[in-house]
Image 1: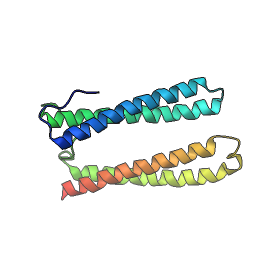
Image 2: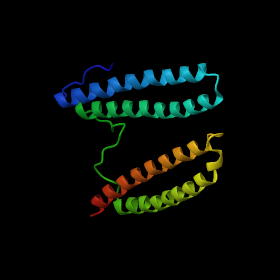
Image 3: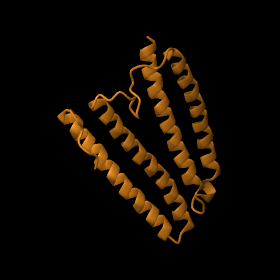
Image 4: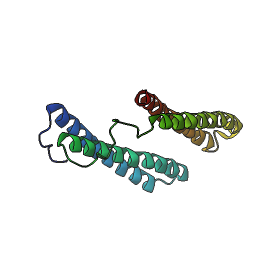
Length: 160
C-alpha cells in the first residue's frame, strides 16, 4: 500500500486508499489468471485467459495512474499528473472535435462490418472462438465510440 497523501482532504485520502487497494486486488487477480492459464490443458482457455490478462494489465495500469494523479493533485506537485486534467483541449478544440467526429464515423462503419461478419461465422459458433472474438471486437468498438463521444462533447464545450 502506498504511503498516505500529504495535506490531502478526507475525500482524497479515502479515494486514494480505494484506488491503491483496488490496484493490489487487480495485481492479485492478474496473477491468478496467469496461473490458471499456465495450469490449463486447454489451448482455448489459455488463449482466452491471455485476452483477459491483457485487460487486467491495462486495468492495473489505469488504477496506478489514477492514484498517481490524485497524489500529484492532492500534494500540489509541480509535474503533470499521469492522467491529464480536462482543463483544455489544446489551442484549437474545434479541430479535436472534428477529429473525434471523423473517428466516430470510422468506428460506426467498423461496427457495421463486425455485425455482418458475425452473421457469417454463426455456423461455427460452437466449434471455434471466432464468434466470441467478433463479439469482443464489437464491445471494443462500442468502447472506442464512448471515448470519442466523450472527447467530442468536452471539446465542443471548450470550442464555444
